[in-house]
View 1 (spheres, one colour):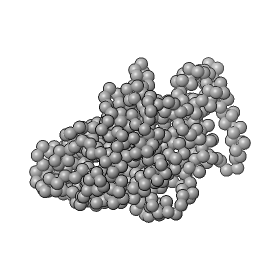
View 2 (cartoon, one colour):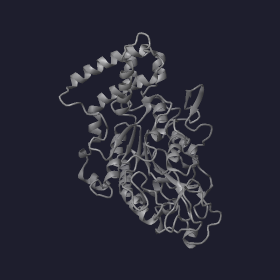
View 3 (cartoon, rainbow, N blue to C red):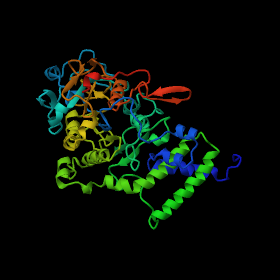
View 4 (cartoon, helix red, strand yellow):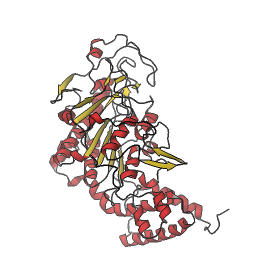
Length: 483
């Protein structure tokens, strides 16, 4: 039976709005509707606002670029040099648990196949597989003592993004957009860039119970139309589209009056409005043809090995430059060795082959991104984060591979209020477990929010009668990393 005073096609129209609203991204300004009197004040507050909001205290960073390495790099083959690991190759690893990873490991030490040396004035140790990124170690703060709670990709990615390894909680990008709003009403405040979607797909970057205006706009780096459903229909003028949107807005405003507490309907209306404005702003922001030949060469957009991540990194810089608040980039490599497209760093069978290929695909673009941000004066206000969802075992899987290891991994941060050249925390002599100044995901999130001017204990959202926060009931700001 249809609800009273609701047209018979209510369900079909509602289904259409749900699907269309999710297609283009989510992020138009709620104030547009509120200013026109189409939302009650209670509904506007419930739906949230994307207008710029003041931080809790002066911020060091205005924006974030999170360079997510799906599949997870091995800490002992990238930045956490362990001489004892090299000296005891093939020997029994004391305390090794064959079930630490997702599969079963040998319990025997596996030395890194890569050469290490120290770089920069800070003397940071790094693997030979990063000749470009290592030029910037004095601007990086390395965290050698990270740990998480799951040894499987999907729940670990959920935890890294939302603080818990269950679906339904908002990701950090949504929390940041909820707390600070957007800096450009013609572009989304939160963007996710991917190639093959990583394990877990859309839920790992979902807004959870936050209003849907805070969900990201996804950009597929492999597609000729990177933002789905954005282009205007052929033979459909701008005036015709504006008229259609106005009719749709009025019809749904009338529909919404019967349901004043349905925040998702307001979010879907927002998405139509933002999509309309993005039809002009987004193509310009995504047009890499406007960049110089020298810039393309620096990033490696014309090289087969680097072109996907190079285009992602260059696009990330252009988006941040235009006021996008939060960009999360899932390195769109093609894998290699034991990895596959959605988990390119997943070196189960041969860590040497896998990591050399995966590093080749990201090293030059990330090095160029850091140099470009610095040259343009953007690095001081842009927080750059690098890492995966967990680490890898110090003992072998098979003869040459490494299994998943949530007990220890390395991440680095740069720019946006980070003190360069810092080496924080430590894993044990074999890089197997974090032992000194251990850093959990809640601590990482607390630090990210702090750099953006947000107190992680004050940034809350009431849902089902409880005030939730990104860091739940844990998390400490890692003040040793801060300028």
